[in-house]
Image 1 (tube, rainbow, N blue to C red):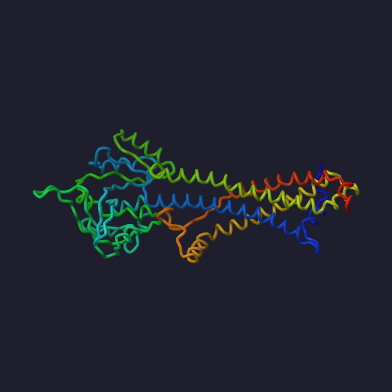
Image 2 (image 1 turned 90 degrees about the horizontal axis):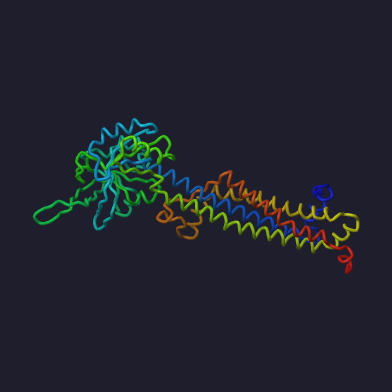
Length: 417
């Protein structure tokens, strides 16, 4: 059965265009196109936001977090220099840096906040991550041993209302025993810069000081909490750090960035699947819209269809006419939705900021979404899947109206003409 002969094309295109005395048919055809376009655009933007959120979250986590860590099970690692040398010689390890990490309190005036204090060596820390790129108002090398200086996360500095040049008081969790009781160990620190990673959880909770200063404040002696590793393949961090721990003989606590943030990426993957299924309902509405459009065309053109039948046009050709109409509506809607979706996704941050300014509210709160802006990345695979699904639904939605038109009885249709 052949659906695309010149006669069918001419009739289908004529039915899609409005006559000078009746613009209704072209209007409902336009509504069908818009329905498909909106469904495709919404799916593209929503899945693009999920993709962008996942990619941005990965990039920002990897810029501030170690690919993997090796730490002591029962306390600090005493002979960490020799251990670091062995780890650095393992295949797949690009850099190793020691760190000391403890929970503590930071106070400025009447404001107090619990923080994660991390002691680092600037030159080694810069080798395992990109923290140096996120320092504002100073530099990572300002954390000189014995200077008792601190880099605060941007959100933490805002919470404590401090700026570069101010002092904060650090209270260590383990106090010093005196005749008057246990007195918390405190140390005044000079703020030499802030950290602006764009990852709210990090910027709100982390304070960096020199490794030697952290050792004195938290009394770890010559030991460190653990080693931070930079790996050649961060996406194989779990397997790599496990192999390294086995090669070292075990007795260590190991972790990697995928394990520490597994819930984030698992929730994103689940949300993407759910959103795709739910938003297919929009496409379903668009498909029903095409069915309604073609059914109205069939009713409007019933006398024309009857005349065509009397002139020898076969039912198969009539089916082809209305299938071509629906296919054209689906194709135009899919292409329009693809263009609209890509345009919105490319300018989404600007559109969100403009909408926030217009409404006077915050749509993307970093305390909720972990990021301070809404990125969108539309992949070719997603675009192909969405456009293909929309086009197939549009084509399937033409079958019932086309069959209905083909079953028109000429005598019955022309009885009242």
